[in-house]
Image (tube, rainbow, N blue to C red; front, side, top):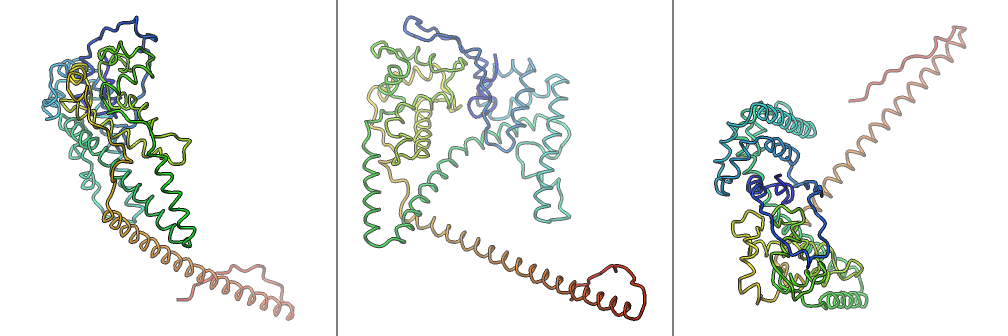
Length: 419
């Protein structure tokens, strides 16, 4: 077995994912109903970048821990709470010396990398006399008090930091999307202010027409409902909708055959629904909004199906969800164009922030211009000094020549700026 779950769900919920992957159960598929049954075990799926600033360190620690048989066996018996609480980290004391040595070296390299980052930052700020050891405290994914060896506390801190950071990841994406939408509206309104009344009415009319075109799309099925999954079964998988079978569906879309549907595999199920609303060829369809819609769909399905909140869907969880009333008779799904993404008050507050940032940038630009002008003035002054000295030397040489004294050769000029 392998810890693919770590790789496929943005690399973490570190050990819950590992435990899940270790216990994957093969699922029978009626191959008479599946057109393409080529094995997918040979597919090599590269671990995605988590976006964490310690991403490489995280992946290397996972890779090393994977080599220890004792640690893997403990994982098989551990539950999610035991892993998240940090109790499992104590088992690190029992791993082989060879594994511990590799982990020690990884930690020393990571500490060295962080120190270089700190030094580079301080150098850019021209800070001196700072305590680098004290500054290491800001990094919460390792124990900075012991920079040389990898202990159980380091594993505990790495698990907790990555879990918290990845849970924050989706929230940050939503916040950034909201800012994106407010910026679009801000720029649209600012542009309208530059137009005369006739042009402004034309632009407003075009804007409303594009909104109507975007909103005029087929009904979007509720994500995770029977109707939505049957549509994937028929149109993407090429199977008879009357033969829809949840267990076979799960197997087909468990792309890496690890026994789970991770976040990426779930998001792939929503492509057909998203294509009803978004077309990259249409000016009225925003592909950034499409990705936000995909994220919302995935989060909704996870909240409905993922009962133990490990960011993975097991076959048992999936089949249990297909027995619920919501699966057969879901509510209507509201797409982004049917929702108010921000209020006027939020937009006004955002515009105030933009104005403050623009004023600060203008002030900095003015300061830089003044510095440039001062440097130019000093340069011009030095150039004038240089010409004065050159003229004085030429006059002295001419005088010596007139008096019959041999020229002394080129003189070394030294300039002292006026204070």
